[in-house]
Amino acid sequence: MFAMMTLFFKDSEVIAIPEQNLFGELSVQGDKANQNYQQAWAYSVSTMIGNINPQNIDFVKKIMMKVLSPQLQVQIEPMLDRQAEMIKMRDIRQVFIADDLMHEPETDLITVWGQKITFIGGEPKADTKWSYEFKVVARNGRPKITHIDQYPGTPRKRNQAMKNRNEAPTDDPSAQPYYDSELEVGVLEAASDLKAKEEAEQN
Image 1 (cartoon, helix red, strand yellow):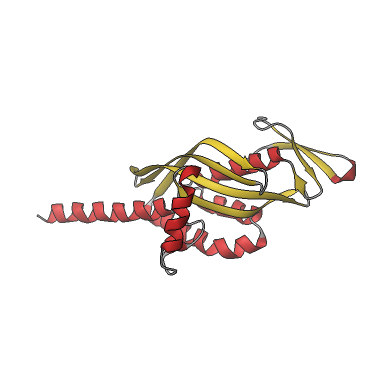
Image 2 (tube, rainbow, N blue to C red):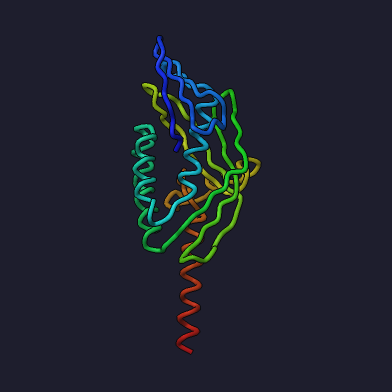
């Protein structure tokens, strides 16, 4: 997260200045955050949730629950619990390196994309382009995420990713928003590798 110095002015305006000023001045006027503020928080959250491991997953979940809107908290908390358990049991580590981000001014949708690598037991199991979507608003001067999603590929692949999700059975986890398919694929590949290793040892 950003370490910020916050200055308060009249009319409830807040100017937040990151230690490393990557996006320019971040400002909030009432509940209206400027584009720099939205981009900064989208980038910060994407790098947080994209770089998870058994040691930090509980901390990441705690922070996520604070920045998600109440509606998203209800929707996403069960999935976060499931993923946290899987990460700890399987010794999963994910590394996300952001390449770029894009802000759509009409809807304030921000997409951050880059390279994501999934390791299980120290072995790389998946290496792919990955995109995170956010909509960030301000509530009492604090960031709240009202939309969050993720999918494999760059934003150019979004339509196909959404099509695959919509065509999935409703009881399939991949039909759910914020579902991390690479996490599941990595676990299945790790299980397959373990089975092959055990069979080889028995022969």
